[in-house]
Amino acid sequence: MNVLLEIGVQHYLVLATALFCIGLYGATTSRNLIKVLMSIELMLNAININFIAFSKYVTPEALSGQVFAIFIITVAAAEAGVGLAVVLAIYKHFKTVDISKIHLMKW
Amino acid sequence: MDLLGILPEILVCLTALGVIVLDLFLDPAKPRTGKLAFANGLGLTLALGTLLGLHWGGYASVETFSGAFLPDLTAVFFRAVLLLAALLTLMLSVGYVQDKLRHPGEFYSLMSLATLGALFLVSASEMLTFYLSLELLSISSFVLVALRKTQARSAEAAIKYLIFGSISSALMLFGFSLIYGLSGSLNFAEINTFLHQQGSEFVYRFTAVEGQSAPAFQDGHLKIELMAALVLILGGLGYKIAAVPFHLWAPDVYEGAPLPVTAFLSASSKVAGFASLMRILETLSADVTVPFWTRMIVILAVLSIVYGNVVAIAQQNIKRLFAYSSIAHAGYLLMGIVALSEFKSRDMALLGLHYYLLVYVLMNLGAFAVMIYFAAKSQSVRLQDWTGLGRQHPWLGFVLTACLLSLTGLPPFAGFLGKFYLFGAVTMMGSQYLWLVLIGVLSSVVSLYYYARIIRVLFFGQTESSGSSPSEQTPPVLLALASGISLVGILGLFVFPNWVIDFVAQINQLI
Image 1 (cartoon, rainbow over the protein chains, first blue to last red):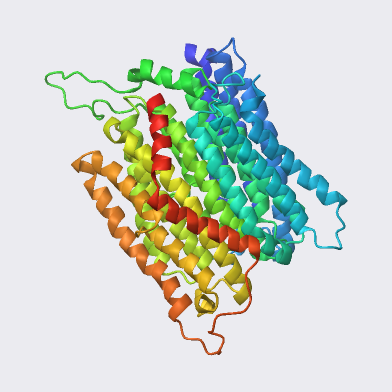
Image 2 (image 1 turned 90 degrees about the horizontal axis):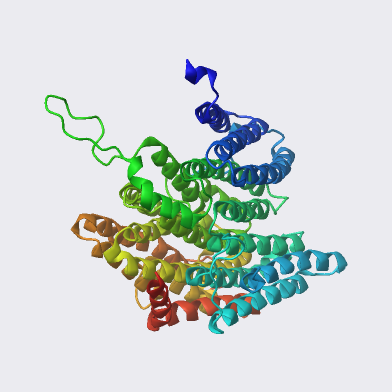
């Protein structure tokens, strides 16, 4: 019962891995580009949980993992900005954000 | 703080910002590409000069910025190669940017920023710096690919590049977080020490017990946490170097991107990817991990070489052909990475990787310089539209032929020596890897077929028009200069490889 009562690093790891897998699934199977970008954010947030949990349980005296998480949040925002701009450009040309209808180039 | 060590990077950063500011003050009604290109070229040349001057002036540095930045000799070499690649890309881009792009300032600024990311990437010695510089390189590249706003293909290529890039950098980061959790450190050197000291905790050890069936895992099998971290990190970096099976973005992005951007991606991005892969694998090298990642890299190398060369045969679009050719070259270079894993072949592999990456930049950008001119002449990037162009422009046709033969790996061009070193390094590992060399050599023969097809179309194709006599028009000076530098480079490095050999010997002495 102890495992269930005390929250340890493994709980965070299970949560982060589940979140990461959901994000990966969403990013690879969604047909809507906005959904794909959201799934990628989910993956990055799973990584943040990982880093913060490790920072707390493995290196409690150093904050390197938490600093890393802050940087990931910043870079994710920049990436989302560029991503949305490109989605706008896609919409202007194709009049859709359905990824299966964007296939000018094949093989 | 030792700012002298990052002086080249500071100069590149100032150049990127300066070009944007200069763009504001220039009259948009008049052509401004030349001025912007000049300012950018000046900044990059200064940076290259500073880097080489510091090196020859005896400046040597250990880790600076709390161990985030390590300007050792390997980093100096790759930073010089990256700045050279950026300068060559700049030279060959001027005509194209003037004709086709509405935003020359943004193009040059983003190219400098991407180069800045690549420069930091090859000298990062800590995960956070590594990740940030990788993202600077990637995000700038996404925008560069999307820069031809009127073209639907450009936007499509950008979204494919962005999605693949984001997913694979997320995979890599997940691997990083696992490594951080295991070792409790972000610093490469500390991680390496950790793996050397406590790596044996991460393998299964079994002692034979009578009456029990054999365990499911073999002795020495890597435990899942470390294995997952290695697979994820290799997946993330495999995308950057476009190795099969992480190559899916490459053909579409190469086709959709503006031609100078394709040239930039095929040269700078690949050099930065390989330099960072070398450094990461050096970090993750310990007795327990080396056999595992060697197996993975062997698989990637074989798949890339075979797939790249075979699919390139069917290509009619010259940009897609070069995408598959660059996948195949990633495979050859991965053979060198395989040879890094053993002590007896390590020196040769380092020489091969350094030499081949330098030569690859020269021959690829030389080919792209000519291709940009031919594409502008024929208004097409399909091979059949280029019939007879080599006869009309003998000099450029000659340079393209030389670059293609060098890419194939024929003497008297430097591509031959590069492949010789890489294959030689794998041979030195012993007979169990000879089949890998055999695949490499046979695939090079296959690659001769599709490279020679370009040469045949250029010089021996039938043209309906009578315009097969040498043309009076001369190509732009900068473009001709870029092609000249590449030709001199690939011939000169074949005759005098000692320059690189001596430099790599210096690196080896320090290890």
